[in-house]
Length: 397
Image 1 (spheres, rainbow, N blue to C red):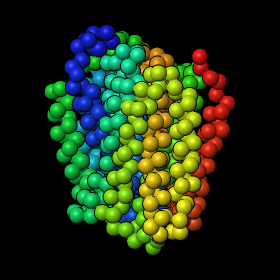
Image 2: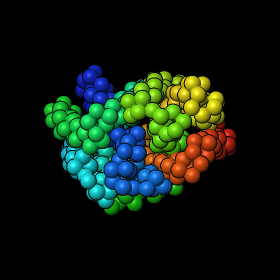
Image 3: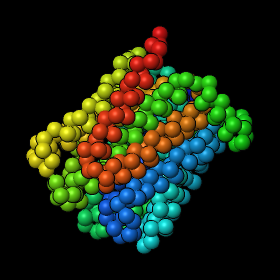
Image 4: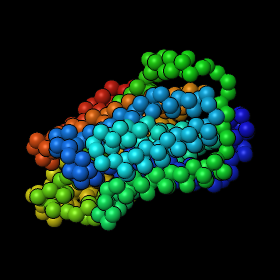
């Protein structure tokens, strides 16, 4: 099973479900801390102005892994790489669960992000298994599992924290990673990339790809803006909902976060539209919806039922927009080169996760300084600027 053709022919039908489930379980580790920024910061004695580091360092670790570890998928047997990363993730989660000092938790958080890049070895794996005409749908289906993990992580984390304390979610996920590793070691097919460059040469080739692939640069910047406001929204809204305007418990915040799961339906839909040549139109819609969701969130007086309903609809619209733009971008970059797919994906994800890390920090800072009004205006501005930049993109034939 060394060639792409053989892999496509021999891949069992259930492999997509396995990949989607694994992606959801792994990527959730990046988001368990988002609704718990307040409780974790209080327990570890972090000030409100720097509480965003709890999320930001996880994302910085993820960015580092995207650049340094994900490209290994082009030269290292993929199943072995995934299992090694999952093992590291389980160890880091256990360290976070046992942490009683800020420095320990923050270092563990960075390691959680670093090892969770296993998910970005699995997404290109799905693209390798799919023929060209169905690649967008395959990536969309697997990405829908990834997005379900992102969106369910927040409510699950809130409920577990409410019942057992914030340490419990990290301990439970450590156990889940061990079990997932056992399943994947038995069920995930091997994928051996064709012999090519060594690790240093591979890293050097990434600068060349970034310089010579305008599609990669544009798609990464669009998603950096979208993921930046996604992180801003889900870092600040738990603080907003728990604050004096709404006085919500962690369980109430979990119910609110649960509505965002509906945004995951956008992933397979966007993939199908991209397969049929509608990527340009879908990108414009996604960026416009991303900006509009923050305007929608400002409807109604703070603390009113109308305000809560508007914020809820805004969460759904934003998650839908981010999901669509992600799948369209991945479909576009995976079509650039089969042999560079892991490197392209690593660059794409790293660039937009920098946007996510900045969004988390800026959101926490803006909320601490001026509350939701300032945070929401920043959230509106980034996709609006990305939409203006998108308008300069030449239409593809």
